[in-house]
Length: 556
Ligand code: XMP
Image 1 (cartoon, helix red, strand yellow):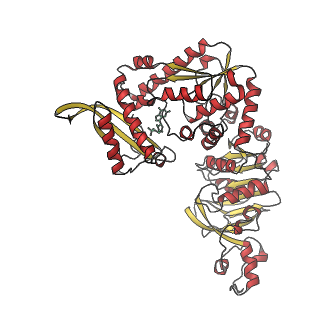
Image 2 (cartoon, protein in one colour):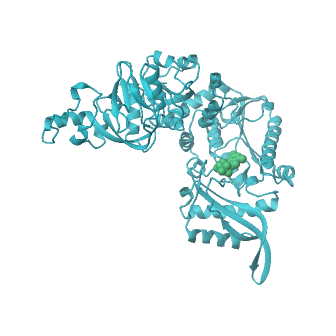
Image 3 (spheres, helix red, strand yellow):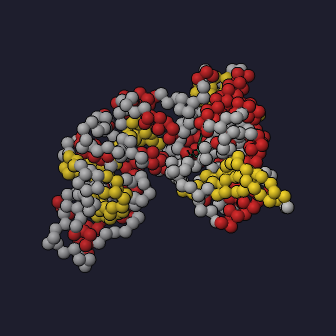
Protein backbone atom coordinates (compact mmCIF):
# COMPACT_ATOMS: atom_id res chain seq x y z
CA UNK A 1 0.00 0.00 0.00
CA UNK A 2 1.28 3.49 -0.84
CA UNK A 3 1.95 5.44 2.30
CA UNK A 4 2.92 8.93 3.30
CA UNK A 5 5.33 9.62 6.12
CA UNK A 6 4.80 12.66 8.33
CA UNK A 7 7.87 13.82 10.18
CA UNK A 8 6.77 15.47 13.42
CA UNK A 9 8.48 18.62 14.65
CA UNK A 10 6.03 18.97 17.54
CA UNK A 11 3.25 21.13 16.10
CA UNK A 12 -0.18 20.93 17.69
CA UNK A 13 -1.45 20.36 14.14
CA UNK A 14 0.66 17.30 13.23
CA UNK A 15 -2.12 14.84 13.98
CA UNK A 16 -4.51 17.03 12.07
CA UNK A 17 -2.29 16.77 8.97
CA UNK A 18 -2.38 12.99 9.38
CA UNK A 19 -6.15 12.96 9.69
CA UNK A 20 -6.56 15.10 6.58
CA UNK A 21 -4.24 12.82 4.63
CA UNK A 22 -6.25 9.78 5.76
CA UNK A 23 -9.53 11.56 4.94
CA UNK A 24 -8.20 11.91 1.40
CA UNK A 25 -7.95 8.14 1.31
CA UNK A 26 -4.18 7.89 1.72
CA UNK A 27 -2.54 5.98 4.56
CA UNK A 28 0.08 7.85 6.57
CA UNK A 29 2.06 7.54 9.75
CA UNK A 30 3.77 10.04 12.00
CA UNK A 31 7.35 9.63 13.17
CA UNK A 32 9.36 12.00 15.37
CA UNK A 33 11.93 14.20 13.59
CA UNK A 34 14.83 12.30 15.15
CA UNK A 35 13.68 8.92 13.84
CA UNK A 36 16.52 6.77 12.56
CA UNK A 37 17.10 6.81 8.80
CA UNK A 38 16.59 3.05 8.60
CA UNK A 39 12.96 3.38 9.76
CA UNK A 40 12.27 5.92 7.05
CA UNK A 41 13.89 3.73 4.43
CA UNK A 42 11.99 0.65 5.63
CA UNK A 43 8.72 2.58 5.60
CA UNK A 44 9.15 3.22 1.83
CA UNK A 45 7.20 6.47 1.79
CA UNK A 46 5.50 7.52 -1.41
CA UNK A 47 5.91 11.08 -0.14
CA UNK A 48 7.05 12.85 3.01
CA UNK A 49 5.41 15.74 4.85
CA UNK A 50 7.46 17.76 7.32
CA UNK A 51 5.15 19.16 10.00
CA UNK A 52 5.17 22.51 11.75
CA UNK A 53 6.73 22.92 15.14
CA UNK A 54 7.06 25.31 18.05
CA UNK A 55 10.75 26.05 17.59
CA UNK A 56 12.61 28.45 15.30
CA UNK A 57 15.12 27.15 12.75
CA UNK A 58 17.18 30.26 13.51
CA UNK A 59 17.90 28.95 17.01
CA UNK A 60 20.92 26.84 17.68
CA UNK A 61 20.20 23.11 18.04
CA UNK A 62 16.71 23.44 16.64
CA UNK A 63 15.53 20.21 14.98
CA UNK A 64 16.24 19.32 11.37
CA UNK A 65 14.78 16.76 9.00
CA UNK A 66 16.86 13.59 8.66
CA UNK A 67 19.07 13.98 5.57
CA UNK A 68 17.58 10.83 4.08
CA UNK A 69 14.35 12.77 3.50
CA UNK A 70 16.10 14.61 0.65
CA UNK A 71 17.96 11.56 -0.62
CA UNK A 72 15.11 9.10 -1.15
CA UNK A 73 13.86 10.95 -4.21
CA UNK A 74 10.19 10.88 -3.18
CA UNK A 75 8.20 14.14 -3.11
CA UNK A 76 8.55 16.25 0.04
CA UNK A 77 6.19 18.89 1.41
CA UNK A 78 7.22 21.11 4.31
CA UNK A 79 4.52 22.89 6.30
CA UNK A 80 5.47 26.00 8.29
CA UNK A 81 8.50 24.84 10.34
CA UNK A 82 8.84 22.07 7.76
CA UNK A 83 9.24 24.67 5.00
CA UNK A 84 11.76 26.59 7.05
CA UNK A 85 13.91 23.59 7.75
CA UNK A 86 13.87 22.66 4.04
CA UNK A 87 15.08 26.18 3.22
CA UNK A 88 17.79 26.07 5.89
CA UNK A 89 18.98 22.56 5.07
CA UNK A 90 19.09 23.16 1.32
CA UNK A 91 21.12 26.37 1.45
CA UNK A 92 18.55 29.18 1.77
CA UNK A 93 17.98 31.57 4.63
CA UNK A 94 15.27 32.04 7.23
CA UNK A 95 15.19 35.19 9.35
CA UNK A 96 13.63 35.32 12.78
CA UNK A 97 10.66 37.33 13.88
CA UNK A 98 10.63 40.22 11.41
CA UNK A 99 6.88 40.32 11.41
CA UNK A 100 4.65 37.83 13.13
CA UNK A 101 1.75 36.53 11.13
CA UNK A 102 -0.95 34.83 13.17
CA UNK A 103 -4.45 33.97 12.07
CA UNK A 104 -5.92 34.84 8.69
CA UNK A 105 -3.69 36.11 5.91
CA UNK A 106 -4.61 36.72 2.31
CA UNK A 107 -2.25 34.79 0.10
CA UNK A 108 -1.62 34.99 -3.60
CA UNK A 109 -0.64 31.69 -5.05
CA UNK A 110 0.72 30.63 -8.42
CA UNK A 111 -1.76 28.21 -9.89
CA UNK A 112 0.73 27.05 -12.46
CA UNK A 113 2.43 25.21 -9.62
CA UNK A 114 1.18 21.65 -9.30
CA UNK A 115 0.61 22.32 -5.60
CA UNK A 116 -2.07 24.90 -6.41
CA UNK A 117 -3.39 23.53 -9.65
CA UNK A 118 -7.12 23.43 -10.14
CA UNK A 119 -7.84 25.92 -7.36
CA UNK A 120 -9.33 28.45 -9.71
CA UNK A 121 -11.99 25.96 -10.70
CA UNK A 122 -13.32 25.95 -7.17
CA UNK A 123 -12.91 29.54 -6.04
CA UNK A 124 -12.90 33.21 -6.91
CA UNK A 125 -10.33 34.84 -9.11
CA UNK A 126 -8.33 37.91 -8.32
CA UNK A 127 -8.53 41.02 -10.45
CA UNK A 128 -6.01 43.32 -11.95
CA UNK A 129 -5.54 45.65 -9.00
CA UNK A 130 -4.42 42.65 -7.00
CA UNK A 131 -2.03 41.75 -9.75
CA UNK A 132 -0.30 45.11 -9.51
CA UNK A 133 1.15 43.99 -6.20
CA UNK A 134 1.47 40.37 -6.97
CA UNK A 135 4.37 37.98 -7.27
CA UNK A 136 7.61 39.24 -8.64
CA UNK A 137 9.80 36.43 -7.50
CA UNK A 138 8.02 33.73 -9.40
CA UNK A 139 9.07 34.01 -12.96
CA UNK A 140 10.30 37.00 -14.84
CA UNK A 141 8.04 36.23 -17.81
CA UNK A 142 4.96 37.14 -15.84
CA UNK A 143 6.53 39.65 -13.49
CA UNK A 144 3.85 42.38 -13.17
CA UNK A 145 5.30 45.66 -14.28
CA UNK A 146 4.03 49.03 -13.24
CA UNK A 147 4.07 50.21 -16.84
CA UNK A 148 1.70 47.52 -17.94
CA UNK A 149 -1.96 48.31 -18.24
CA UNK A 150 -3.87 45.75 -16.22
CA UNK A 151 -7.25 47.21 -16.95
CA UNK A 152 -9.96 44.55 -17.31
CA UNK A 153 -10.43 45.69 -20.88
CA UNK A 154 -7.05 44.23 -21.75
CA UNK A 155 -8.76 40.87 -21.98
CA UNK A 156 -5.86 38.82 -23.14
CA UNK A 157 -3.40 39.96 -20.51
CA UNK A 158 -5.97 39.75 -17.76
CA UNK A 159 -6.82 36.25 -18.74
CA UNK A 160 -3.21 35.16 -18.76
CA UNK A 161 -2.38 36.68 -15.40
CA UNK A 162 -5.55 35.57 -13.74
CA UNK A 163 -4.64 32.10 -14.91
CA UNK A 164 -1.46 32.41 -12.96
CA UNK A 165 -2.43 34.18 -9.77
CA UNK A 166 -5.11 33.22 -7.39
CA UNK A 167 -6.03 34.69 -4.03
CA UNK A 168 -6.92 32.56 -1.03
CA UNK A 169 -7.41 33.09 2.66
CA UNK A 170 -5.12 30.95 4.71
CA UNK A 171 -4.28 30.27 8.31
CA UNK A 172 -0.83 31.45 9.33
CA UNK A 173 0.99 30.91 12.55
CA UNK A 174 4.62 31.86 12.28
CA UNK A 175 7.18 34.41 13.30
CA UNK A 176 10.06 33.58 10.95
CA UNK A 177 10.19 34.23 7.24
CA UNK A 178 12.18 32.94 4.31
CA UNK A 179 14.58 35.66 3.16
CA UNK A 180 16.61 33.63 0.67
CA UNK A 181 15.27 30.81 -1.47
CA UNK A 182 17.60 27.82 -1.93
CA UNK A 183 19.08 27.26 -5.40
CA UNK A 184 16.71 25.38 -7.68
CA UNK A 185 13.59 26.68 -5.90
CA UNK A 186 11.10 29.38 -6.84
CA UNK A 187 8.50 31.16 -4.73
CA UNK A 188 4.94 30.20 -5.57
CA UNK A 189 2.94 32.27 -3.09
CA UNK A 190 3.17 35.51 -1.17
CA UNK A 191 1.34 37.39 1.56
CA UNK A 192 1.54 40.98 2.76
CA UNK A 193 4.15 39.93 5.31
CA UNK A 194 6.32 37.68 3.17
CA UNK A 195 7.37 37.36 -0.43
CA UNK A 196 7.90 33.66 0.08
CA UNK A 197 4.78 32.00 1.49
CA UNK A 198 5.41 28.83 -0.53
CA UNK A 199 8.26 27.39 -2.57
CA UNK A 200 8.79 24.62 -5.05
CA UNK A 201 11.56 22.78 -6.76
CA UNK A 202 9.54 20.97 -9.39
CA UNK A 203 12.56 19.07 -10.73
CA UNK A 204 13.13 17.46 -7.32
CA UNK A 205 9.49 17.50 -6.28
CA UNK A 206 10.19 19.41 -3.07
CA UNK A 207 7.56 21.87 -1.89
CA UNK A 208 7.13 24.11 1.11
CA UNK A 209 4.13 25.97 2.50
CA UNK A 210 4.22 28.67 5.12
CA UNK A 211 0.47 28.29 5.47
CA UNK A 212 -1.28 25.45 7.25
CA UNK A 213 -3.33 23.52 4.68
CA UNK A 214 -4.63 21.13 7.34
CA UNK A 215 -6.67 23.59 9.39
CA UNK A 216 -10.23 24.39 8.42
CA UNK A 217 -9.85 28.17 8.13
CA UNK A 218 -7.41 27.68 5.22
CA UNK A 219 -9.36 27.93 2.01
CA UNK A 220 -8.65 25.06 -0.37
CA UNK A 221 -6.45 23.38 2.24
CA UNK A 222 -7.93 20.02 1.25
CA UNK A 223 -7.32 20.69 -2.45
CA UNK A 224 -3.72 21.78 -1.81
CA UNK A 225 -2.97 18.67 0.27
CA UNK A 226 -4.65 16.45 -2.30
CA UNK A 227 -2.63 18.06 -5.08
CA UNK A 228 0.44 16.92 -3.18
CA UNK A 229 -0.87 13.46 -2.34
CA UNK A 230 -2.63 12.50 -5.53
CA UNK A 231 -0.98 14.56 -8.31
CA UNK A 232 2.55 14.95 -7.02
CA UNK A 233 3.05 11.75 -4.96
CA UNK A 234 0.73 9.77 -7.26
CA UNK A 235 -0.98 8.02 -4.35
CA UNK A 236 -4.19 6.08 -4.89
CA UNK A 237 -7.12 6.65 -2.59
CA UNK A 238 -7.03 3.17 -1.15
CA UNK A 239 -7.42 3.94 2.58
CA UNK A 240 -11.16 3.35 2.86
CA UNK A 241 -13.18 1.95 5.75
CA UNK A 242 -13.81 -1.28 3.85
CA UNK A 243 -10.09 -1.69 3.16
CA UNK A 244 -9.18 -0.90 6.75
CA UNK A 245 -11.46 -3.71 7.91
CA UNK A 246 -10.21 -6.18 5.31
CA UNK A 247 -6.54 -5.48 6.11
CA UNK A 248 -7.18 -5.62 9.81
CA UNK A 249 -8.92 -8.98 9.61
CA UNK A 250 -6.15 -10.50 7.49
CA UNK A 251 -3.55 -9.12 9.92
CA UNK A 252 -5.35 -10.47 13.00
CA UNK A 253 -5.74 -13.94 11.43
CA UNK A 254 -2.07 -13.96 10.40
CA UNK A 255 -0.80 -13.04 13.82
CA UNK A 256 -3.17 -14.96 16.06
CA UNK A 257 -3.61 -18.16 14.08
CA UNK A 258 -5.63 -20.58 16.19
CA UNK A 259 -4.69 -18.96 19.54
CA UNK A 260 -7.25 -17.58 21.95
CA UNK A 261 -7.48 -13.85 22.62
CA UNK A 262 -8.89 -12.14 25.72
CA UNK A 263 -10.31 -8.61 25.64
CA UNK A 264 -11.60 -6.31 28.36
CA UNK A 265 -14.81 -5.00 26.83
CA UNK A 266 -16.05 -1.81 28.47
CA UNK A 267 -18.88 -0.97 26.10
CA UNK A 268 -17.04 2.19 25.02
CA UNK A 269 -16.33 2.84 21.32
CA UNK A 270 -12.74 1.64 21.20
CA UNK A 271 -13.09 -1.70 22.97
CA UNK A 272 -16.41 -2.36 21.19
CA UNK A 273 -14.81 -1.87 17.77
CA UNK A 274 -11.85 -4.04 18.76
CA UNK A 275 -14.31 -6.74 19.87
CA UNK A 276 -16.19 -6.60 16.56
CA UNK A 277 -13.02 -6.72 14.45
CA UNK A 278 -11.64 -9.66 16.42
CA UNK A 279 -14.97 -11.45 16.34
CA UNK A 280 -15.10 -11.07 12.57
CA UNK A 281 -11.53 -12.32 12.25
CA UNK A 282 -11.40 -15.18 14.75
CA UNK A 283 -14.96 -15.75 16.01
CA UNK A 284 -15.05 -18.13 18.98
CA UNK A 285 -11.34 -17.72 19.70
CA UNK A 286 -12.16 -14.31 21.18
CA UNK A 287 -13.20 -14.16 24.83
CA UNK A 288 -14.52 -10.81 26.02
CA UNK A 289 -14.61 -9.96 29.70
CA UNK A 290 -16.94 -7.23 30.92
CA UNK A 291 -16.36 -6.18 34.51
CA UNK A 292 -19.33 -4.65 36.29
CA UNK A 293 -17.53 -2.46 38.79
CA UNK A 294 -20.77 -1.19 40.32
CA UNK A 295 -19.67 2.25 39.14
CA UNK A 296 -21.27 2.14 35.70
CA UNK A 297 -24.26 3.95 34.23
CA UNK A 298 -27.78 2.67 34.81
CA UNK A 299 -28.40 -0.71 33.12
CA UNK A 300 -25.01 -0.62 31.42
CA UNK A 301 -24.10 -4.18 32.23
CA UNK A 302 -27.41 -5.52 30.91
CA UNK A 303 -27.14 -3.45 27.74
CA UNK A 304 -23.62 -4.64 26.95
CA UNK A 305 -24.74 -8.23 27.45
CA UNK A 306 -27.80 -7.72 25.23
CA UNK A 307 -25.75 -6.13 22.44
CA UNK A 308 -22.63 -8.21 22.35
CA UNK A 309 -23.71 -11.58 23.68
CA UNK A 310 -27.28 -11.95 22.51
CA UNK A 311 -27.32 -9.74 19.41
CA UNK A 312 -23.84 -10.23 17.95
CA UNK A 313 -23.16 -13.64 19.53
CA UNK A 314 -19.80 -12.82 21.05
CA UNK A 315 -18.17 -15.03 23.61
CA UNK A 316 -18.75 -12.71 26.58
CA UNK A 317 -18.15 -13.22 30.29
CA UNK A 318 -19.91 -10.67 32.50
CA UNK A 319 -18.30 -10.45 35.92
CA UNK A 320 -20.41 -8.97 38.69
CA UNK A 321 -17.66 -7.44 40.81
CA UNK A 322 -19.75 -4.74 42.50
CA UNK A 323 -19.21 -6.00 46.02
CA UNK A 324 -15.45 -6.38 45.49
CA UNK A 325 -15.17 -2.77 44.35
CA UNK A 326 -17.37 -1.36 47.13
CA UNK A 327 -15.37 -3.30 49.68
CA UNK A 328 -11.94 -2.01 48.62
CA UNK A 329 -13.29 1.53 48.24
CA UNK A 330 -14.98 1.63 51.61
CA UNK A 331 -14.28 4.90 53.42
CA UNK A 332 -11.80 6.11 50.76
CA UNK A 333 -12.36 9.82 50.04
CA UNK A 334 -9.29 11.02 48.15
CA UNK A 335 -10.00 11.15 44.38
CA UNK A 336 -6.56 10.02 43.25
CA UNK A 337 -6.58 7.19 45.76
CA UNK A 338 -10.01 6.12 44.51
CA UNK A 339 -8.72 6.13 40.94
CA UNK A 340 -5.73 4.01 41.90
CA UNK A 341 -7.83 1.52 43.85
CA UNK A 342 -10.41 1.20 41.05
CA UNK A 343 -7.65 0.68 38.46
CA UNK A 344 -5.87 -1.93 40.56
CA UNK A 345 -9.05 -3.78 41.41
CA UNK A 346 -10.02 -3.89 37.75
CA UNK A 347 -6.68 -5.52 36.95
CA UNK A 348 -7.16 -8.03 39.77
CA UNK A 349 -10.65 -9.00 38.62
CA UNK A 350 -9.52 -9.27 35.01
CA UNK A 351 -6.54 -11.36 35.98
CA UNK A 352 -8.73 -13.70 38.04
CA UNK A 353 -10.92 -14.27 34.99
CA UNK A 354 -7.95 -14.74 32.67
CA UNK A 355 -6.47 -17.32 35.04
CA UNK A 356 -9.67 -19.37 34.83
CA UNK A 357 -9.22 -19.70 31.08
CA UNK A 358 -6.78 -22.05 29.47
CA UNK A 359 -4.80 -21.55 26.27
CA UNK A 360 -5.22 -17.78 26.12
CA UNK A 361 -2.13 -16.38 24.43
CA UNK A 362 -3.13 -12.84 23.53
CA UNK A 363 -4.48 -9.78 25.27
CA UNK A 364 -6.31 -7.37 22.95
CA UNK A 365 -6.27 -3.67 23.66
CA UNK A 366 -8.11 -0.66 22.29
CA UNK A 367 -5.06 1.58 21.88
CA UNK A 368 -5.70 4.18 19.19
CA UNK A 369 -3.28 6.18 17.04
CA UNK A 370 -3.21 9.44 19.04
CA UNK A 371 -2.01 7.43 22.10
CA UNK A 372 0.77 5.95 20.00
CA UNK A 373 1.86 9.34 18.63
CA UNK A 374 1.74 10.97 22.05
CA UNK A 375 3.76 8.20 23.57
CA UNK A 376 6.40 8.54 20.82
CA UNK A 377 6.50 12.27 21.46
CA UNK A 378 6.96 12.08 25.20
CA UNK A 379 9.85 9.72 24.72
CA UNK A 380 11.33 11.74 21.88
CA UNK A 381 15.05 11.81 21.76
CA UNK A 382 15.10 8.06 21.36
CA UNK A 383 14.11 7.19 17.85
CA UNK A 384 13.84 3.50 18.61
CA UNK A 385 10.57 4.23 20.47
CA UNK A 386 8.94 3.83 17.11
CA UNK A 387 9.03 0.09 17.62
CA UNK A 388 8.25 -0.09 21.30
CA UNK A 389 4.77 1.25 21.81
CA UNK A 390 3.33 -2.10 22.62
CA UNK A 391 2.16 -1.28 26.08
CA UNK A 392 0.44 2.04 25.62
CA UNK A 393 -2.17 2.15 28.39
CA UNK A 394 -1.40 -1.51 28.99
CA UNK A 395 -2.88 -4.14 31.28
CA UNK A 396 -0.49 -6.03 33.55
CA UNK A 397 2.64 -7.62 32.30
CA UNK A 398 1.94 -10.26 34.96
CA UNK A 399 -0.54 -11.85 32.56
CA UNK A 400 2.34 -12.90 30.29
CA UNK A 401 0.22 -12.48 27.22
CA UNK A 402 1.18 -11.17 23.84
CA UNK A 403 -0.48 -7.85 23.00
CA UNK A 404 -2.64 -7.27 19.95
CA UNK A 405 -3.93 -3.77 19.20
CA UNK A 406 -6.15 -3.93 16.12
CA UNK A 407 -6.97 -0.20 16.05
CA UNK A 408 -3.60 1.24 17.04
CA UNK A 409 -3.21 2.79 13.59
CA UNK A 410 -6.62 4.47 13.59
CA UNK A 411 -7.80 7.91 14.57
CA UNK A 412 -11.01 8.14 16.60
CA UNK A 413 -13.10 9.17 13.58
CA UNK A 414 -11.77 6.15 11.67
CA UNK A 415 -12.58 3.89 14.63
CA UNK A 416 -16.15 5.21 14.57
CA UNK A 417 -16.48 4.60 10.83
CA UNK A 418 -15.20 1.05 11.24
CA UNK A 419 -17.67 0.51 14.09
CA UNK A 420 -20.60 1.68 11.98
CA UNK A 421 -19.50 -0.50 9.06
CA UNK A 422 -19.39 -3.46 11.46
CA UNK A 423 -23.02 -2.79 12.41
CA UNK A 424 -22.50 -1.22 15.81
CA UNK A 425 -25.37 1.12 16.62
CA UNK A 426 -24.96 4.84 16.01
CA UNK A 427 -25.96 5.46 19.67
CA UNK A 428 -23.03 3.39 20.88
CA UNK A 429 -20.58 4.90 18.40
CA UNK A 430 -21.47 8.48 19.21
CA UNK A 431 -21.87 8.14 22.96
CA UNK A 432 -20.24 10.74 25.20
CA UNK A 433 -16.97 9.66 26.79
CA UNK A 434 -17.20 7.96 30.16
CA UNK A 435 -14.18 7.95 32.50
CA UNK A 436 -12.48 4.66 33.39
CA UNK A 437 -13.18 5.05 37.15
CA UNK A 438 -16.82 5.72 36.23
CA UNK A 439 -19.15 6.96 38.95
CA UNK A 440 -16.22 6.56 41.33
CA UNK A 441 -15.19 10.12 40.40
CA UNK A 442 -18.77 11.37 40.20
CA UNK A 443 -19.65 10.52 43.80
CA UNK A 444 -17.72 13.03 45.85
CA UNK A 445 -15.85 11.47 48.75
CA UNK A 446 -16.62 7.98 50.01
CA UNK A 447 -18.58 5.64 47.75
CA UNK A 448 -21.68 3.79 48.95
CA UNK A 449 -24.05 1.54 47.02
CA UNK A 450 -26.92 3.82 48.09
CA UNK A 451 -25.21 6.84 46.46
CA UNK A 452 -24.53 4.88 43.26
CA UNK A 453 -28.22 4.04 43.04
CA UNK A 454 -29.33 7.69 43.38
CA UNK A 455 -26.70 8.94 40.93
CA UNK A 456 -27.48 6.31 38.28
CA UNK A 457 -31.15 7.26 38.28
CA UNK A 458 -30.54 11.02 38.17
CA UNK A 459 -27.93 10.65 35.41
CA UNK A 460 -30.23 8.44 33.33
CA UNK A 461 -33.02 11.04 33.49
CA UNK A 462 -30.65 13.83 32.42
CA UNK A 463 -29.31 11.81 29.47
CA UNK A 464 -32.78 10.59 28.45
CA UNK A 465 -34.06 14.16 28.33
CA UNK A 466 -31.02 15.38 26.38
CA UNK A 467 -31.73 12.71 23.79
CA UNK A 468 -35.48 13.42 23.74
CA UNK A 469 -34.87 17.12 23.17
CA UNK A 470 -32.16 16.56 20.53
CA UNK A 471 -29.59 18.19 22.75
CA UNK A 472 -27.37 15.16 23.39
CA UNK A 473 -25.10 15.76 20.39
CA UNK A 474 -25.22 19.47 20.94
CA UNK A 475 -22.90 18.96 23.91
CA UNK A 476 -19.65 16.99 24.13
CA UNK A 477 -20.18 15.40 27.51
CA UNK A 478 -23.03 15.48 30.01
CA UNK A 479 -23.56 13.71 33.31
CA UNK A 480 -24.74 14.03 36.87
CA UNK A 481 -22.54 14.17 39.96
CA UNK A 482 -23.56 13.18 43.48
CA UNK A 483 -22.84 15.46 46.43
CA UNK A 484 -23.06 13.72 49.80
CA UNK A 485 -24.37 16.88 51.44
CA UNK A 486 -27.83 17.08 52.92
CA UNK A 487 -30.10 20.08 52.50
CA UNK A 488 -33.65 20.69 53.60
CA UNK A 489 -36.66 20.03 51.40
CA UNK A 490 -40.37 19.95 52.06
CA UNK A 491 -42.20 16.98 50.66
CA UNK A 492 -45.97 17.12 51.19
CA UNK A 493 -46.14 18.60 54.64
CA UNK A 494 -43.01 16.94 55.91
CA UNK A 495 -39.50 18.33 56.08
CA UNK A 496 -36.82 16.04 54.80
CA UNK A 497 -33.10 16.31 54.74
CA UNK A 498 -31.64 14.88 51.54
CA UNK A 499 -28.76 14.89 49.05
CA UNK A 500 -27.71 17.15 46.17
CA UNK A 501 -27.26 16.20 42.51
CA UNK A 502 -25.26 18.50 40.23
CA UNK A 503 -25.70 18.38 36.46
CA UNK A 504 -22.80 19.19 34.14
CA UNK A 505 -22.80 19.58 30.36
CA UNK A 506 -19.85 20.95 28.43
CA UNK A 507 -18.86 21.76 24.90
CA UNK A 508 -15.32 21.04 23.85
CA UNK A 509 -13.27 19.74 20.96
CA UNK A 510 -10.25 18.39 22.79
CA UNK A 511 -11.41 18.00 26.43
CA UNK A 512 -8.36 20.05 27.46
CA UNK A 513 -10.50 23.16 27.66
CA UNK A 514 -14.30 23.19 27.81
CA UNK A 515 -17.18 25.63 28.06
CA UNK A 516 -20.22 24.93 30.18
CA UNK A 517 -23.17 24.40 27.88
CA UNK A 518 -25.91 27.02 28.06
CA UNK A 519 -28.76 24.52 27.91
CA UNK A 520 -32.21 26.15 27.76
CA UNK A 521 -33.65 27.07 31.16
CA UNK A 522 -36.93 25.34 30.36
CA UNK A 523 -35.03 22.15 29.61
CA UNK A 524 -33.06 22.31 32.86
CA UNK A 525 -36.28 23.02 34.75
CA UNK A 526 -37.85 19.89 33.28
CA UNK A 527 -34.87 17.71 34.16
CA UNK A 528 -34.73 19.12 37.69
CA UNK A 529 -38.43 18.51 38.21
CA UNK A 530 -38.16 14.92 37.00
CA UNK A 531 -35.15 14.15 39.20
CA UNK A 532 -36.80 15.68 42.29
CA UNK A 533 -40.03 13.81 41.61
CA UNK A 534 -38.65 10.48 40.50
CA UNK A 535 -35.43 9.93 42.45
CA UNK A 536 -35.78 9.43 46.16
CA UNK A 537 -33.42 11.19 48.56
CA UNK A 538 -32.56 14.10 46.30
CA UNK A 539 -33.45 17.49 47.78
CA UNK A 540 -31.81 19.81 45.28
CA UNK A 541 -30.56 19.84 41.68
CA UNK A 542 -27.74 22.22 40.69
CA UNK A 543 -26.38 23.13 37.27
CA UNK A 544 -22.63 23.60 36.93
CA UNK A 545 -21.70 26.83 35.12
CA UNK A 546 -17.93 26.51 35.38
CA UNK A 547 -15.61 26.52 32.38
CA UNK A 548 -12.47 24.42 32.16
CA UNK A 549 -10.07 25.88 33.09
CA UNK A 550 -10.19 26.36 35.95
CA UNK A 551 -12.82 23.71 36.74
CA UNK A 552 -12.09 20.25 35.36
CA UNK A 553 -14.90 18.43 33.55
CA UNK A 554 -15.28 15.78 36.25
CA UNK A 555 -15.78 17.07 39.78
CA UNK A 556 -13.07 14.85 41.18
P1 XMP B 1 -11.20 16.36 33.35
O1 XMP B 1 -12.03 16.05 34.54
O2 XMP B 1 -9.75 16.02 33.56
O3 XMP B 1 -11.72 15.38 32.22
O4 XMP B 1 -11.40 17.75 32.85
C1 XMP B 1 -11.31 15.39 30.87
C2 XMP B 1 -11.88 14.15 30.21
O5 XMP B 1 -11.26 12.99 30.78
C3 XMP B 1 -12.22 12.17 31.42
N1 XMP B 1 -11.60 11.68 32.66
C4 XMP B 1 -11.10 10.45 32.82
N2 XMP B 1 -11.06 9.39 31.96
N3 XMP B 1 -9.98 8.11 33.63
C5 XMP B 1 -10.51 8.23 32.40
O6 XMP B 1 -10.48 7.25 31.65
C6 XMP B 1 -9.98 9.12 34.53
O7 XMP B 1 -9.50 8.98 35.66
C7 XMP B 1 -10.58 10.34 34.09
N4 XMP B 1 -10.76 11.55 34.70
C8 XMP B 1 -11.39 12.35 33.79
C9 XMP B 1 -13.43 13.04 31.66
O8 XMP B 1 -14.63 12.29 31.73
C10 XMP B 1 -13.37 13.97 30.46
O9 XMP B 1 -13.93 13.34 29.31
